[in-house]
Length: 267
Image (cartoon, helix red, strand yellow):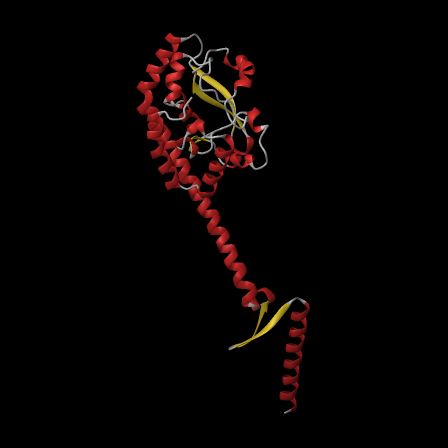
């Protein structure tokens, strides 16, 4: 009898020590069907554990969704730009011959533009102006027809060649930017890439346009192009950034075709 009592007392002391050790290390003792089990504070309360788990799962799902969206967009950019280059190759050759016959100068116009997160890159177009166009721009600044003054637009710009007027009206001058898309500097759909001088005038709100890759076409390109003031362009670009997605890009690309063919707002 004494032996049984002694063993019982030892077991009680052992359990007591375990409870004291657990309480000092931040662990609750929870009774289960099979005896005593120890659970951390964060797990013993469902109100603390499950909301945190759900939040982590939602974050992982959101990250995976964003990654898959970027992969789909890049895949569409590569396939779309390659297809466009192949299909437009005869047009490229015809424009090249016309440009050389129309005015002296290089075939392509290369310019520094600002891309994703403010990173500069070389932006390519078919040359649509005379070779001294950049030098003559300063003298024309006072005739800028852009309502906001951030970008330079002029309907009857004297620097534009005869060939240039045609290819600008139908956005043929922008076709070399499919190579920019292949290089990863641009996307098929996104805000148009600005000049460094334009970015220097941006407000903090305007800089949100630099949160994604710039594109060949965008919402305001299919809604009036150069007729839309800069501030409204920013609003439309931010609207696109908030709701961007694969099918939205497809819709904008389809709407770009009639916008290009009509030439509305292009100058």
